[in-house]
Amino acid sequence: MLSSIRLTNTGKIPLSLYCVGGLSLVLNFIECPLNCDSCPWESNISKRSARLIEFNPQVVVKLAKQYDVDIIFLHGAEPYNYISYDDVKRIKDESNVAIGLKTNPLIAKNNSRFTSIINFIDVALFEIVLNDDIELQTTSLMNIMHSSIAQFKHIEIAVVVMNNKNNLALINTLKNVINIIKKNDIPINIVPINNMYKVFDINLINRLREEHPLIQIPTADVFENASTICPRCKNMVIIRRDGIVYKVNINDIGKCIFCGYKLVNSMSKKLVKLPLDIPLV
Image 1 (tube, rainbow, N blue to C red):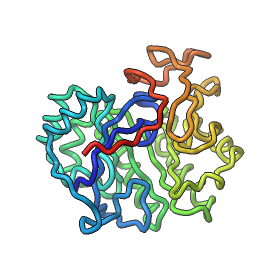
Image 2: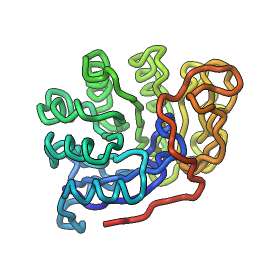
Image 3: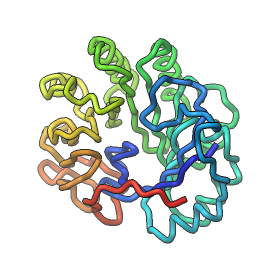
Image 4: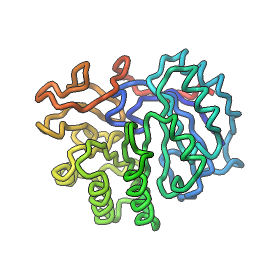
C-alpha cells in the first residue's frame, strides 16, 4: 500500500554508487510482512495509521519528468506485492528513467511477483535486518546473488541495525555478506535506526573496510563514516554526510580521479548539495 511519494537525495535511499548525489522520486509502501518494531523506512506501520495514496503510474511518470529525477525508487514494504508487472513496465517506458527496488531477500525468495517485476528493475537494494531471522536472510541473499536475478543490475546492500547493543552480531553479519558478494564492488550501506551513529566509531569502520572497502553509513553525520573510498587506492571518492554528497572525486566516465579505477556506471545529471525530503503527493 502506497503511503507517500517524495523527492529526495539518492544518498538517503540509501544508494552509494548509483547516480551519486542525484535526485530520486521515492514511492514508499507500508504494511511490511517483516513487522519490525522500528523501521528506517516507516514501512512497519499499518494502513489504519497512515494516509494511503492511490497508485497511479501516470502521476509517477508526470512527477519524474517534472523534477527531472535520476531514479524512481520503489521503497518500504515489498512494493511488488502492491504494484503489477505492467505498471512498472509502463512507468519505465514512458518516463525513460531508471527504476530501483528495495527488497528483503527472505520475503522475495520464491515470490513469483518479485521474479516477474525484477526484469524491469535497474537497481536492486537488498535489505538485511539484524533480527532473529538474520541467518535465513543472509542465506536467501546468497541464493539470489548466485541466480540469474542478480545479473545486469546495479546491486547494493542495506544492513539495518535495530539497536546499538550488539556490535558482534553486526560484524558477523557484515562478514557473512562480504563472503556472499565475494570480491565484487557491491556497496554495503549500514542503516542504523534512530541515528545510533556514535556506536560506529571510525576504527570499527576502517577495520571492516580492510575486508571490503565499499562499506559506509551514507546518512551518518561524520564524513569519515558516511563517505565512500576507492577499493584500489583507498582515497575518498565520494565525500558525503547525512546522505548529502558534497564532493565527487570521480570523472565523467565513472573512474576514480586518483587511480583510474572504474567505480560508477551511472552518473547523476547534476550534483544536488541541498538536503531534500519533500512530500509531493
